[in-house]
Image (cartoon, rainbow over all chains, first blue to last red; front, side, top):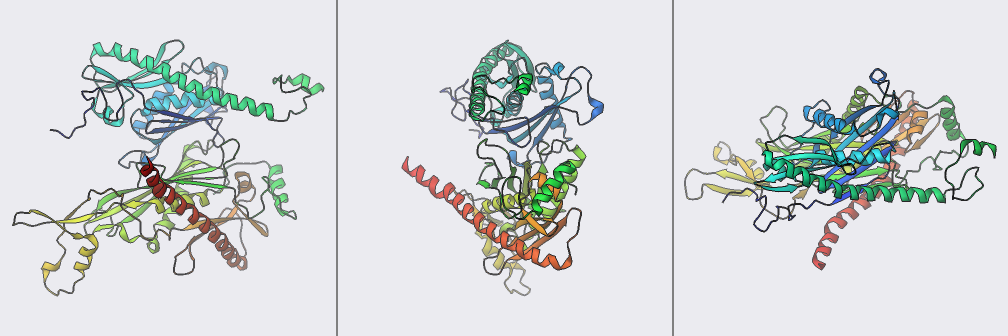
Length: 267
Length: 339
């Protein structure tokens, strides 16, 4: 009758052919970009987010520095052609500021900022394409970018959206589903099973929340595996490259990679 | 515009004296007129009408580095009686710089830089001499607004050339949806009768009808025919200009400067050329940027030299664009047929 899309049909399939708990495919690219210390690009379904991390470095605005820990700054940029309708969002846009603040709050307890007093860690998020799950994709990409930058964190942060269609929970919503369903975004720590962010902008029945949280936690573990695999592959490549490079001033083979400064000076 | 990075006096003189040596030397071993490798892909933004991603100087081993620009066009329908809308459509270019490309710049400085790039690009690309013919929908009523958005994702020098190349590729890739004029008649069974193609409607208006007011095109609206094709290409797509930046240092000049070289030789001459298929190349814009001066007598030879390099760049890009077209249409269709 109506032209509305069926969110979940009788066969248990969603509008893009996925099952209830099925995630869209994720591609992770950790190749370095520009002068960034760490960068990651995540393609989650049709959502594409690129994150660059700079730091720890001297703060751009010296007045903002904190004497006991590093300052975390997040800037979000959304390219105008990332959505169906062209829309130019400026830096001062409320939506963008909110997204940046949410990412910042998510990572503040995880990043060990107390190791770098009076410095700044800047995170630049650029959104190239959006099809639902913008916040989770940004959080996942930020985790990976921080990891590639070598910034100490207590755990991975993995985020996912979970929506509810009548009583059936759905994972990883597209824009189409996000517009129609109440949903919450959960960022969890897969090793300690803690949650650092729960965001919801719509109404959801109390009885559904616990189920959603449970499933989102499970999905977080799956994401963790995926992200860990990408990080490990990158590290393996780096180690190989280090082995191949000629050692400067060293006499030993490529076995001991840690070069002691004093020892190196003596030879 | 000052240099984007600051280098020490010693490094500056090192780069400068290397450029003055015989033979001239550059930090990455290129000769003065060599470009770094240019990578291009079109159709990278699925929601845009045309798009391209361009990289100059990506390092082959690490898979990173280089100047990277993303360009995309998006078409919007405008009602001509609006404030900005123009009959026959218009083009608006916007350049945005990712803060990750310029991590040391303050937000205000970044805005200034974006504005510099936007102005140059908009002035050249939206010039009436390059305006495509098929951006009008209904004469005097509706027209397409073409938004060309460019994003500088990372800067490793020579941004202007990259911006123009990416803009050209994105415009080349742009498809304008086919439209059909619709007119309403009061009487009769079919209240909504599709009129002829839009081209026909326009010639109808030109009919020397004297005082016969019935000849005025009565189409009031348009619809998009449901068709598998994305539409026709933007007319005059061979015309979109390319730009060559000559970085001038004392009596010599060099192409495709890296960031450090731009800081050491801040005077640059930017020349944009269009290459019409029937007539000789046209100079679309000339800008002299940075501190310093060029003797009047030298300018002419510099512009003609730039034309030579622009022609080479044009030929190479043309081959690549046709190749991309082939990859995305012909090959994709073959692959689909083989399944």
